[in-house]
Image (cartoon, rainbow, N blue to C red):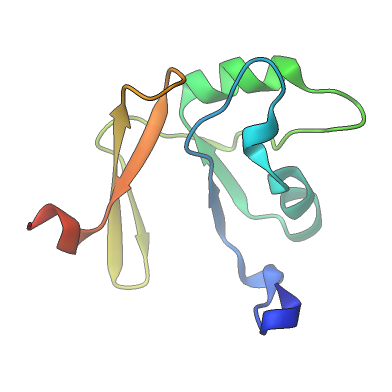
Length: 104
């Protein structure tokens, strides 16, 4: 991030859209960012319930700070995202909608 001029210390939220119970690979480097920069990690309860038991010492997973439910919102500056649950390839898959997308 720093190579492209972004400051990871400015990250306030990480939204994990889905996860698997087998490997936790869908969390990427969220746990590293959470430990180093302390953003709030948001995911559906179902995602946390499925991924956190798959945690391994050599591959720690981000800890859920906020449960996202269908219809919850997150305001970033003057933009508000609305979350909806989807029938994805894992239970509790989330999608976020931008105001411009909802008007289409």
